[in-house]
Image (cartoon, rainbow over all chains, first blue to last red; front, top):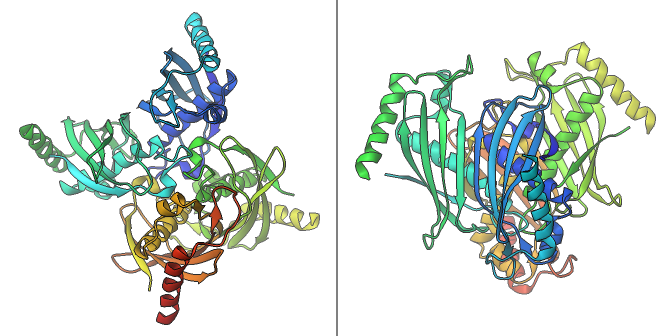
Length: 141
Length: 141
Length: 141
Length: 141
């Protein structure tokens, strides 16, 4: 089941076409991803305190309609695939007032050691939470 | 042939992992795209004065290595496919000092009327320049 | 009385010192200012539909302590001085969990015609709302 | 004597008023400051490798005219006051083609230990370079 976060479009998020600049949605995928992890009991601060970072290796986005200043948006995040070394999420960003779909996209992160910069297998304590969440997503489909 | 722009990584482009935040490369694709168009004789300001905007409909990026503060980067932009209604570009971002490939990606834009918000066929004066550039790319491969 | 908005620090708001980049607080003053206006019945979209923009002419900020990723912040905005042509706001940004003061600052906006780019006297319908709010602030001191 | 850096306004630097968003100039002060330090032989990377950071404690900006997309700007940075613990810079941002003054401002940084987070006296090897630069500025006035 998707985790939803609300985000209101700020004036500084817009560009001279008077719409949200497209790169901002990539930032907002991060808001969704961080909240998804928080709700299954994982914070990036804990991960970093344990010596892990979670860099993005792939991102894609498809722009369906334009967000505008002051729109209230819903950022929906779903966990897709999970291995011990990487994880993918998918995203939908909608305008709250009428459900208009603005942007869809995906990301892939790899679990990485801060000490070595190498991809690592995530410790069990994190993996079990992510695996449970990913399983719930699949069961819900 | 790719058009190359230099860009130095600013401190404000970094994040708490001490690397360039991944969303910034999507912004830098825009720097490459704008410069590509300028070098073939098209400026966004002219397009907008003629009533056209050029919104992004799709973007993807693959992250190969991390950029760091003060790195001098090369943004290489190539025109790929062109129709009267849309255009795709591909990008490579490299670290100048050693040619390390940091990011690759693609974008698709559609030519859009500012008045109606609808996708439109681009006027001949712009199309011929883009078609010539796209042909040069193909001939060079 | 200050209007308060909550804002959680995103990962993309941090820099390589692992704290919020100082320019982001200037953006967050805008979040506070927009919300202040909304709560007294003025939206930037209405102002723009009536042909007015509200550009910043002066800004200052003093940084007392560093915000970090995932901190929940309170942005407090107060209207200070008002004339028919300009308005000043003051801001305090605090960490919610313990009230630690991170940043204080001020801004001055001028009411400007979109058509001419000139500073203009704000129409009565907007002025009365702003004057009432400014008076409430003074009475509360 | 001011150190000058060129910066072209990107589309993503603009907002829905079709001008540069005012917070971006605060970022561009940083571009000027980093370049100033580089030209007198100090890089932030060296400072950080030696355990120092250089956070901003105060910033102010005055907006005189609006930058637009594709404008080529000059960021002029001057060192003002220096003590062993802090330093101030002043900035002027102009439009290159006609010298129109867009923004002026100031910043104050404090030399800070990364280990303790406390303000520290800067080591002599850095101080002498900054003192020499600050003296040159004063002699030039």
